[in-house]
Length: 176
Image (tube, rainbow, N blue to C red; front, side, top):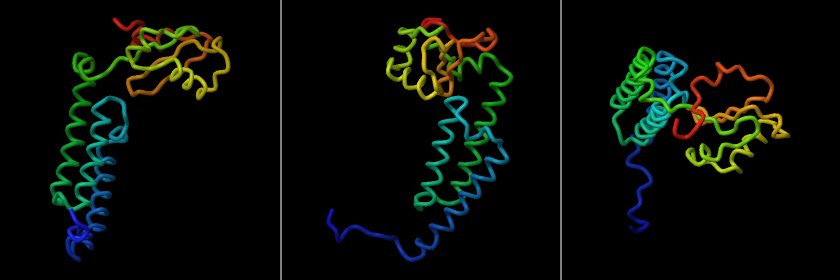
């Protein structure tokens, strides 16, 4: 490829269409997310994350003029529609919820790291200690439990009495 073969712009009309496409798609995504619900761009389950990344990809594809504008609008509607349908199915079916969701896993119990669980989730002790520092922990005695949530967030629970109900769905061991 030579410098002479690099084009900066397709034609002048394309240059005017880019901001129009960007504005149209941003408004479309904003409206669609408002209609779908606040949860649409959350990371509650892995499919939510995939939808968020896909929406960004669709938006970029439209703005760079590689996909027709109406195809992009249809793709946004389809992605959010499928996400809403899957959420409804998960709400009604324990089997669907188990199939689609990761279970939270206990990484530390009463100040003691659970090495086997850390290995399973590919975290090092250094990663765990970093999360504890970020949570403001200054002593291992302060830690009641550390849980890797289904979202990928790490929850640090204080050592004072933890209500067992909070840990009902948390896997205790790597094999459980």
